[in-house]
Length: 433
Ligand SMILES: Cc1cc2nc3c(=O)[nH]c(=O)nc-3n(C[C@H](O)[C@H](O)[C@H](O)COP(=O)(O)OP(=O)(O)OC[C@H]3O[C@@H](n4cnc5c(N)ncnc54)[C@H](O)[C@@H]3O)c2cc1C
Image 1: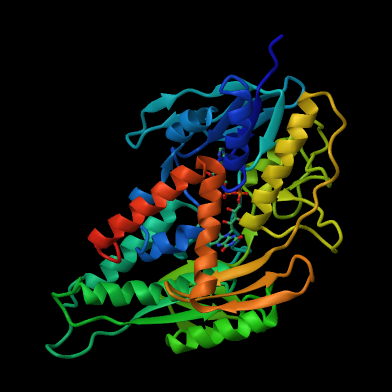
Image 2 (image 1 turned 90 degrees about the vertical axis):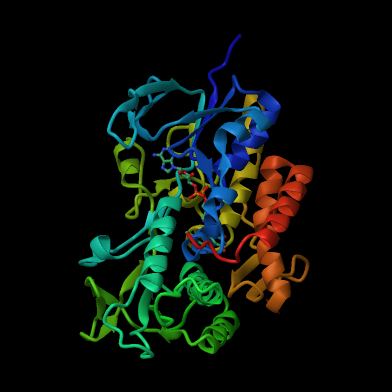
């Protein structure tokens, strides 16, 4: 008897790990992974891609290669419609850059469907934000920001009189969560490296002026206060201007305006304040919340028992706490492990395992290449410990490696890490082209 496949849509932090685990057990005829992109990237690295300290052409992993290695089928395409009665999904037609159709609309039948399409930035209807601000939602946007930064720093400053310092490049980052803080710190290091290589030799050095704007009374508001105090000090030591309690009400081409009408210079603006799930989720006939997330129960099921959702695109209850699970890679990773067990049990016609219980192991924030700050949850004591410096930074990097290990296995992850380390020794510290 043939069973309809397990179809996972979205090969990110959660979806890819789930596909790899199930693929190894059930094989390519039973496990399909669908993604709208050809390459997988660990999303928490996107601020490094934006700063140019990580080369996307080395970092991205081809889904076709991963499918072959982990024994699942990869289908390139974007989910757009769902027919729950027929247990079918529709993928949008795909076109190349010249507008020629590569694939027509396709229909795929599933036995179990897992939706793991992640999230994107939420502009909260702020006028001008969609037009002038850049987000770090995907590789293309991170690359777009990197190119704009490189051009702005290296272009010939025609109006500068010899030996006179050109005006600084003003970068405003809206959102003092982990993404904004990490990007601000990474940018100072990237620009120091660009100066080191003389990437702006045609003209006197153009310096950066970075302003990090946060609506709450402190940055990293979702994390312990001690962490936010230390991160603020580290940012200040890098001359990053941190403004808290400031709500941006309008984005213009060259500046931002806040609730009091104060203006902040912004040659480049990055929007990293808040998330929302993709809008198409509201059209699937499943319950969604006000930020388009699919509403799931404590077993990550939607109202349809054959359809699950995980990661940033799901609103899942946080058992033992009030409210819902945060949008974090750690949550997506644990949910992937949980759903793997659920699907295995289901296939053996056994009663489904206990509800999903999230274990918070703490949070780590990178504040540059040699520094980090974090709070780790003591598993036995339940208390949190503060970590800082190279230790925190190394632990932060190990999360990325753990994700690779879950997908590629320990040996291949070790050889990949070693290969990248060696390559780094023969390449510039920052991408120069
Ligand atoms: C710059 C940055 C830094 C971050 N730092 C941290 C951190 O330090 N720690 C932490 O825990 N979290 C961090 N996060 C958050 C973390 O990246 C997310 O919580 C995590 O990636 C969510 O995993 P996911 O599987 O739900 O979605 P994602 O990893 O976003 O993957 C979603 C996938 O779905 C695909 N997709 C989207 N739409 C469709 C469609 N219609 N059809 C098919 N495929 C589709 C996408 O191409 C993507 O591959 C960071 C995020 C950013 C942007």
